[in-house]
Amino acid sequence: MEEIETACSAIKGDEQAFLQLIKMHKEALYRTAFAFLKNEHDAVEAMQEVTFRAYQKIHTVKDPKYMKTWLIRIMMNYCQDQLKKRKRFISNEVLQEIGFHSNDTTLEIEEAIASLTNSEQKLIFLKYFQETKIKDIAELEKIPEGTVKSRLHKALKSLRNFLTEKGDADHV
Amino acid sequence: MFEKEEKMLNESKKKLEQTEIPDHQINDAIQQGILKAKDKKRKRKKTLWTLTVAALLILTFITSIRVSPAFANAVASIPGMERFVHLIQFDKGLEAIIENEYYEPIGVSQIKDNMTFTIDGVIIDETGAEIFYTLEAPHSIKNIDYNKIDLLNDNRSLIGSIGYNSPRQEHPNRKVDKFSFVFVKPEQFTSNEFEITFQIERDNDKITTFNVPFTLKNDLKNGKVYTLNQEVEMDGQKMLVKDIMVYPLRVAVNIEFEEQNDMEILQFEDMRIEDENGEVWSSIQNGTSGFGGVENKERTYFLQSNYFKEPKELYFKFDKVQSLPKEESYLLVDFGKKQVLKQPSEGKIEITNIHSNSLEMKYRPIRENHSYSLFSQGKNANGGVVEIPTQSTWNDEEYQYSEITLDAADIINPVKIDFVAYPNYLDGSVSIQIK
Image (cartoon, rainbow over all chains, first blue to last red; front, side, top):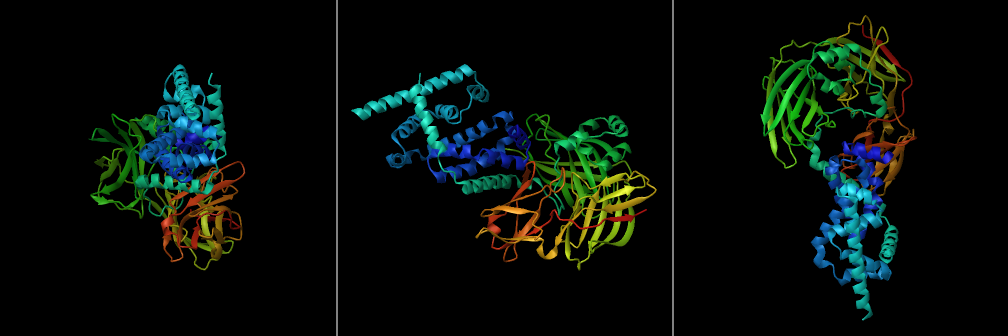
């Protein structure tokens, strides 16, 4: 309830409410940045940029109920832009670094997610990492729930294909 | 169907949830993001020495709206006036102006770059001007900024503070608001010819300049001046109430503070005038509430106007006066060591956190439905000014929390930050008969 009220005030231009709102969601936002960018420095920088973008655009939010998802989407868009810019630098080096800290399963799935299209990545992230309801995604994207489900299905299928091929390759 | 993939996703999510959160760095990044955004929008507020920040309109405040029948009738008799009611009804003086027909309908329009600016009506006196306007366009104007707003009389700029709201627009293509000018000194106009000029900056950085002349038909009402020069003492602190001037838009009270006082006088929470029936006119709630900061020996305070009343007796009163001993009415902070070196011994505001260029604090709420900025600016070790571009405050049921962010570029430790508000009070009360 309080969250919605804060969101409403922030939409109307209340700066304190805006700050409160960002602080309320900062962990989710940071984790999103980290999931995409995979390092602390870039994720912190993303926090600044996303705060900046959100401040400028918050008055365009129509339904305060979806504030968190709206913020997460800005973050995901920003991160994907950044990844595009530095794509050529992502090499085995970075992957190995992550691999060093993580077990195989999570690395594999991260690679698989990275192989998806941008919009599929966002969908998977919202559904499985943010636990956003299909219904909410549908309303936010202004598409029928059925469409969200079929896109999700397609994305999961791509994940499976990637994992299977990778698995096969590893066993050769 | 995709159990395996979903399980993997879930594990990945769990791992993500264990990521460490660099809290300080994130908070700093958020502050920087807000500063950056505000920097882009700065020009929004240009005020000369405005004393306190406009009061917060809180829900309880809105539910207590009372509209007198006389006011309702007056509003109904002016075409289009109902759109402006929300801008008027928190000020008894403005309501009385409408009831007494001192509001002058103008109805002059100008079209520039497809945008139509209409002056619906004005209220002008020697202390300021309220320009009620409507701005319309065939596209959304939710996101515009005003620049270089000025009011001219006979081509002479009337210098003062300028305020305007960013009201929630009911229609994206229409803004209904007012520009509020408060002149630094009472103005003597040389004719009835006025002109308002300003620029509109849109999203695409396109700038449109309006300059709209208008002529006043009504005679200007002059102020009633009560010269008092009466010295009052409260809790051993001496103040000289020099004069009280009553104008249609506001009552201006000039007070001089004795330099030998050992207490710094901060905010007057309940300064007011009262008539013989106990009717009260209190501070301006939503607008410029005075001129002259805590550092000024002489300050001007604005109260809601009772110009159109003819009271038999009139009293000037105040009871709740915030103050601190002069030698400790500030914070001395070393942002490098993240230490508070000095603070008021009253200890009613607790510093809860220090970051590289910001401070967080908590305290019991100072005044119901009202929030104060606690500081105006800081001073660095070299005596240079340290701007405080962001002050934010929020509350839970028990406490009020504030966070201030200083301009990092100005910080040379230690930084001295004077209080302009603090929940510590003088004992006693003051009442002067003006009439």
